[in-house]
Length: 59
Image 1 (tube, rainbow, N blue to C red):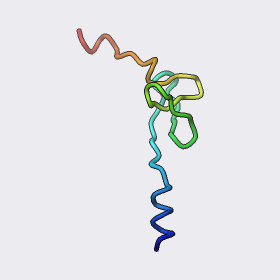
Image 2: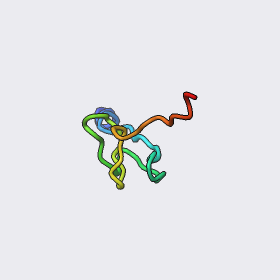
Image 3: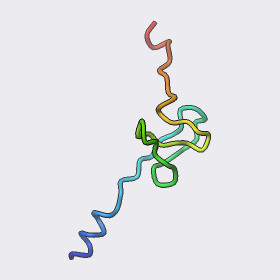
Image 4: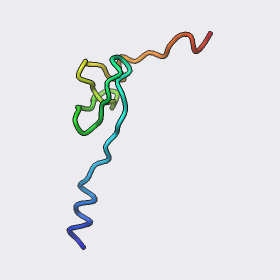
């Protein structure tokens, strides 16, 4: 039972999303996490640091 608890604690939640820039599916298991914004860094180099809300939302 102790080993089961240890395994559950060591398993990390995998975040799944898509890149706002290139629309590729990304996850926190296969890609790095940005130290500044804590977002997933896509293979194209984008993370939340570069994201800007579309201006049409506020017109």
